[in-house]
Image (cartoon, rainbow, N blue to C red):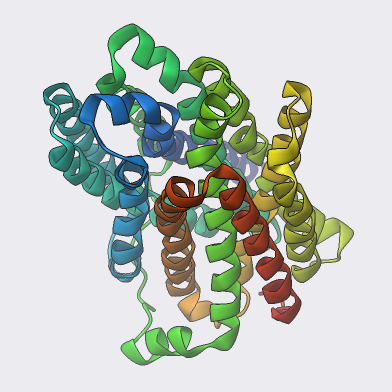
Amino acid sequence: MTPQATDSDMSDPTAETAVRTANSTWWLVAGASLISMGLAAYEIVPASVTPLIQESLRVGPTAAGLLVGVMFGTAVVVSLPAGAVLDRTDSRTAMAIAVGMLVIAGLWGWRAGRRGQYESILASRALGGAAYVVVWNAGIDMVSRAVEDSHRATAVGIFTASGPVGFALGQGTGPLIAQRFGWPTVLLAFIGPAIAGLAVFWPASRGHGGSRGDAPSLREFGAVLRSPSVWLVGALGFLGYALYLFVNSWGSSYLTQELNFSLAVSGLVVAVFPAVGVLSRISGGLISDRVFDGKRRPVVLCSFGLAAPLLLGFTQLRSLALLVTVLLLIGFAVQLTLGLSFTYVREVVDLRVAATAVAFQTSIGLAGAFVAPIAGGAVVNRAGFASAFLLAGVVAVAGIIVAWQAPEPGRQ
């Protein structure tokens, strides 16, 4: 990854400055990714202790799923306004404010959980959702602007990989934290990584993230919302995130309730699903750039084409080794789309409204993430896990159809 200041013909003093800038860029990406990882772990961790939450708060599957879904629902509403504000303000400061919001949300949720106050926990999670979308949009904005165009997909892929790392951390450690300290502590546990990330990010990002003078007008903003290409890429994000959150939210409960795995083992097995996204999200851009000569659509077609049959047959598996293998493959396939979509949507619009397109993509993608845990809980409650995973397979088939219709953008 090369910062925009690099020039092979520089004099020695200028070259030294470029090296320092390169190092600073890497630390910027690392710090932003660590902040995002902490938020992602906070976001998903209730799914890893769903049975404990249901028993403690005396709520059903749908209400328990809403503790995950509400963060995405909030993000859906907040994303576009946040993107518009970020176009006109300092993204660096916005990242710091968002970490402060996470600290408040974590403490609030922990206290409410100890007191058995479901509605208060839900409200704290909504605040966390607002913090999440600010970090996500601001992080993509700052990373995209800090590197050259030829490295943008890779840099953004590295940042978006923080999501599955955080999900794996939350899924894998949530049951262990709950067993030792009580389940409300999982709402507090992941503030630390976000604060550590801010400590790395803040000095490295000095001079980056300032407001731009060419912020899009209201007419240009409307043009993004009227673009069929943007909606098609957005639909791919919606379907991809829906599959991603369905498996993350209900995979652990399926293994516990249907196959009698312990909660700790189920959490570790399901943690495989987001963990493979570290490779998938980074490699999606590389595969597109190197194997398919910059084409995006073949990667997305492969993504849903691999996920569909695996999801349709998932509930027929009983072997732990097979379950882990299939979860790895599903996780890799689905997250090829998630990692690539934010670069993809930038390339189907004018460069002046690229940030607005990313905010739109975030909003639409997280709408799928919001719907999936709640809809999944409703289907599980009424028809069982087999029907729920069958429906997930149908969603993947729909992804194949949409991907076939999606445009092949010119790279900008």
